[in-house]
Length: 375
Image (cartoon, rainbow, N blue to C red; front, side, top):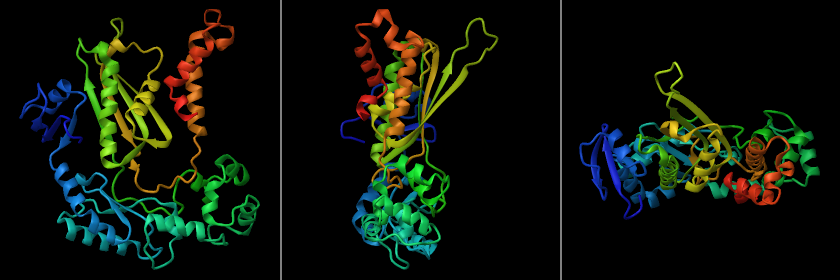
C-alpha cells in the first residue's frame, strides 16, 4: 500500500478499520463497502503484520541458501526460489521450514513449495545454490547425453550452435519446435516454460478476484469501474511481486424484457497470456479486449475480474524463450476482427467511408489492443 492511499482493513465480512475514505465506516459490511468504494484496496487483517515480519527477517533469510518468497504470506504460502539438490529435496524443504519458523515465529501453514525453475534439476548433487548461480551453471555446463536427451538431440543442437545448456535459450522457439517437433519432449517443455522435473506444489494456485455491483445510476460509468478494478488487482500483484498469466472476466447481464429469464445471465470470457503481466494499463487493455462487440454496457449489473496462474515476478521463471510473437499474433487477430466486423470481410481496402482515414483507424484499433506496445 502506497503512502497517502486509502486503506480498508476487513475481517469476517466486516470493515475492521478504515483511514482516509469517506462513506466507509467500521462495522460496515464488506459488500456494501465495495460498492461505495470500488477502486479501493481491501486488505484482510493480519496481512500487513505478516509482510512487516517477513521484511524484518529478510536479511537473515537470504543466508539460508535459496531465496524464500512470501507468496500469499497471510495464508501461509511460501515459495523457494533457486536450485535444490537432486536428492533430498523434501529434507531441504523441511530444514528451510524450521529455519523460517525460528526466524519469523510464524510457521508456514501450507508448507513450502519449490518454484518451477528449469535450472533446478541441473544443480550438482548435494549442493544448494541460488537462482543466479543456477543460471551461471547452465551456461557453464556442456551438453552431454542423459536420460532426458540422447546423442541425436545433442547433434541437432550442435548444428544450431548450442554446445551448452544456457545457449538453448537463444534459439527461437518456432525453429526449435520445427526441428524436434515432439510434443512432451524435454525441449518442448522448456519452450513452454515448464520444468521437466517439476515438484508438485503443496498449495493450490493463488487466485485474485475483484468485483463491483453497478447500480442503475452507475451503469454509464462501467468503463471507469473496469479501470478501477484493474488498478486494484495490479496493485495487489505489484505489492506481492507477482505476474498473472490468465485473466477471466465475468459479467452479470440483465435479461431482456422479452426474455423468459427472470434472473441475471452470467457470461464468462477468459484470456491466457504467453507472458505474465501486472500493469494496470495492460490489464485494462486485455479486459476491454474480452468484451464482445454485441454487448450493451448499460445491461451490465456486475463486473468481476479474476486473475489466475499467478507466479513470482522476482524469481527466475521457467520461461527461457522471450518470444512475444504468439502474443502479438493474437492481438493482431483480435484487432482486425473488429475491423472486419465493422467494415465487412473485405476490410479497410474497400470501405469507401474510411478510404482516407483507413491507416489512422487501423493504427487506433491496434493501439486499443496493445499491439503498439509489443511492436
